[in-house]
Each structure stands twice: as C-alpha cells, then as structure tokens.
Image (cartoon, rainbow, N blue to C red; front, side):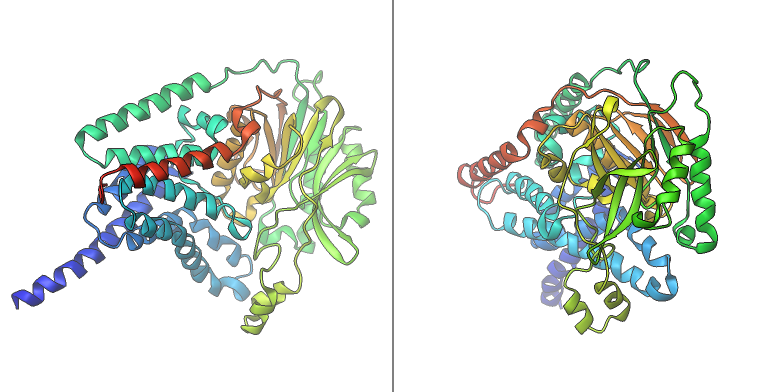
Length: 497
C-alpha cells in the first residue's frame, strides 16, 4: 500500500501544479481592464515561476496558466455569438474554451522548451515566453490582445513601450518576475528593478500639452446595440441620431469642429448608394468634412471602409486591410464546409476583401492621419509598417460586438498603448463606446462612457517627439532575446533555475 501511495503522489502533485497554474493565470488576467489590478497580476506571474520550482511538467504548467489567463481575460469573446443566439449561441462556450486553450499552446511550447534546456532555465523561460507572445501576435495573422506587458498600463512603467515596444516591456516584466521567484535576495533585486522601471517611466512621461489653440474634432457615438444595428426599423433612428449629434452647436462658438468622425459601419447603406446621406451629413456638419465608416462593393467584393466626406461626396477612401478571422473572413473555408458546420459554412462563402495596407489620409490643417478600423489598433507591427509617421491616428470601431464588460475597455487600452509607442495622438469614435481623444502619452483627454449616446468635442493634440520604438521597431529586442537565451543556456550552471 505504501508503494502504491508513493507512486501515486507525483501524479497528484502534477495535477496540483496545473490547477495552481490555472488559478495563477486567472489572477494574472486581473491586470487587464476593467480590473487593472496590476500588483496582483505581477504577483501571479511570480507565482507561476514559483510553481515551476517543484513541477516536472513545465509544458502542462504553461498551458494551464495560459488557459486561465486567456479564459478570464478574453471572456468577452462569447458576446458576438449571442447576437444571433438561435444560430450561433451553441458555439459560445466552445469558442471561449477553444480560443483560451489554443492560445495557451504558445505558452506551453515556451515552457516545454525551457524545461529541457541546461543553464538558467528561468531566464531562458523569460526569453521564450516573450517569444511566444510575439508569435501569437504574428502567426496566422496574429492575435496580440492583452500582451503580458500591458498590465502596467495604469502606471508610469507603460511609457517604456515608447522605447522598447510592448514585447520589450513584456520581457522586462517576465525577467523581473523570474528573478523575484529565484530567492529572497533575488526578490529584493527584482523589487529594485521594478522601482527603476517606475522611475524611468516617470522620466519618459511627457508633460501635458497646451491645447488652447488646437483644432477641434467631434467624435460621434450613436450607441446602436449590435442586435438592432442592422434592423431596418431602427437603422433610420441611429442615422438621424448621428445627424443630430453632428449638427449640435459647439460648446465654444469660436472653435467649431474642423472634422466630425462617425464610427465603423455607421451608415446603413453601401457607399455607392450613399449620395443623399453624404449631402445630409455635410449639411449637418455646416460644411466641415465628416469621416465615417461604411461598407462598399467593388468588382464582386465587399470592403469595410472609412470614407472622408466633403461637399456631399467621398473624396478619400481607406479599406480595412487586417481583417478579423471568423468575423470578417473565414480561414480555410473549404475545410469548414467539408466539416459540415453549416452556420460557419454560410460565412465561409462571404466575408470581406482586405485593403492594400496602411495609407495616408491628408486632412489639411489637421495634418496627416493614419486611419485604423476596429481590430487594426491591436497590431503594433501593422502601424510600424506604414511608410510615414502620421500626425495622428484616426480610429473608428464598432465595439458593440465586444459586449458591455471587459472587451471595449481592453480595446481602448490597446489604443492608448499604440499612441504611446508612436508618440502621436489617437482619436477614436466607437459605436457604443468608448469614444475618446488620447494624446501621445496615452492620456485620455476626453471620452464618452460605454453605452452612452452622444458626442464629444476634443482638441486634437500635436504629435510628440519621435520615439525610439517608432524608429527601430522590434529588431533590437529580437537580437537581445537571442543573446540572453544563449547566455542562459551556455553560461549558467546546469539545470539551475
């Protein structure tokens, strides 16, 4: 009996380690909006490293931690399936579990490789975990939502993304957590490291700008619930609501809006049929240009577009180029159809075509904007791929898809981080919220609450200094990661943590 117990104990322990890691991953997700409990999130990362000191199956621990993190952090992913619950509702739990468990495989691979390396395995894991976050933001068009380094958003530490980018801050976070888990003296050193990051972030934070003479942009938020947005009986209500908000007098008569922005797919018709609507929008804006999301059709393809409307006509058009898989296009449509998933197969034959990529939108006295539609504000590499530095970023989105809890706030948070990375402001109009004006330091200068119909007039901040990250991107970090991994493997004592 004693021998049987002795043999069974390691199996039970392994299960215990996985459960602890699952819980630690969920606590780690409390560092994301709307919770923003960054101290708990950082302690949870330290706990994951601590669990590894006794665990044998590192890959299982990594997978469990990732499943907990993505399971709670991305719980909003079920919301789109309940827009038409009679068709898609049954998919919601499978989507959440499948997405969380699937994204966790990136972490599992990193943890599994680190466990097999000689030398400083904790340091190696910090490198490989960062690489896993980079990979999930890139492979199969990527999904870099809620990267580990984003837990610092509500602290000065987030300013480091202007120097090292989001993945650089992720590596610093993981390396300090690994150090903190290595022993008492190492934990003191890690605390000093966090203090240095904090102090450096304070030094990197630009002072507030004087916006008294800056042009004003009006952000329109019609607040059309996704269940009603395409209802023919309600479309006119939301359209006229947008016109009323556009025509409303400015708070300061001397500073009338120089541009009015409507959110993604704000108009209930195709661009080709919108002539009368464009004229009405121009009249409501008292001649000011209006930027609005709209769908368009060309050569047998539909595009999710942003149109600049001047004098009753679309003078500039930007087509969204980074589409949402399963939402705007269906990956592997042939396979989905052969599997017999009829609800998904219906989407597999439709969807949107992708635009050619980032483009300039010159706006006269407002400077040159980089237009972004919805999901595109999540990808730092796409913004870096633009062959110009914009004066500001113009973001239109329909976050009604994300529900009313965490998704819209997480999307706003990532928009703020894009502004910090580039040192340029970002103005976003969101259908149901949160519409906001964000300066180049990531500060929200003006906003409309989630679920509120209305508009906000906000001065357009000027761009800040050119940031190191906007110049050099992620290449220095990749070189650093390779160098640190080589050091961890070749210079550390064998099998040390």
